[in-house]
Image (tube, rainbow, N blue to C red; front, side):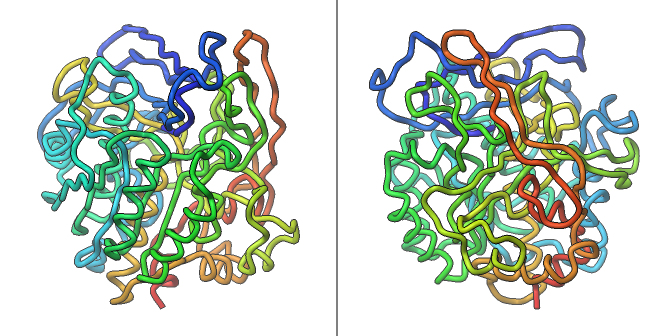
Length: 445
């Protein structure tokens, strides 16, 4: 679920092969020769990676994909166990008194029902959800694949932020469209009001393709930080690659807004955990060549190396990701999503780094509750803690890379060479994924 210009088309394949089987293959960004620079208004789209899991209601729902080891999908209990979140819940650290802001585009008319369905299925407490459309709510068109993709993103973001911090309030702020400017207008609205303890953005694009000033955006994030708000963004779903600005090919680029030093960039891993309990086994860099997707990584062309990164690198430039989270498609998270147009009360398996941003937002909400105050920009503390005590606070990812091969508009293939994971901080996964039971209290000093 990652954003890029609609000049880059998305292609999905339906494979109906059983109730719990793959019926909507993870879509891969494909540059279309029929779509060229200037043909449409520049806008940001999402590239949803999802497959149908089936229909299930009632507490303690179990899908067959949860029962294998390693699991081929995860519910809240498994993820919470894998990352140590349940240990915090036992101590009463559940996000109470915290507010998570999620910025998305368009809307999902079923989000309240989907969230209630998700909570019922997995035995979660009822969520407090506020839906805010500062410039007005755009009517939903189920025949618009772009809007449908964003609706799926909304379900993923809201439900999994809630799964990590079940007592936190969620403010879903909706831009009128996925144009760069409309998304920035929504961010400005949030910044002016100092809304939320943490802001999650599950979208991005190549820095050089943004139609809004990155420095203007930087000031918005700085204002949020000054209000004490932590800002997060997904680092990308195409490894070291991003679509070119005209949609004809792929380029090596860092993703904005994750590349902003005032933002914590979230990379992707493939999590291997016990299919029944969620007990952690190991992680690798997320890279699934069969879908041409991988955890995003990049070196900024706009932002110099921030002081907090001096502790672990000397590149002269801002790099992403800072940290990572489970993002694989084949081991994705279960999501209730009823606005797909393929039936009500369906559950889907979602993958992508956009699953990581709202869950990290949940972790920040837990840390804010523990601290009793907002945390602001957590990057300086993340790097201080990680450089001193990485193996206690994070799962260090030591294998895998972000190299991808993607199709061009003319059908040819291009390989974008990425970076590899290794012991300690690396450019593929940052410090790695969280050991929440240790990291959250450390952030809440």
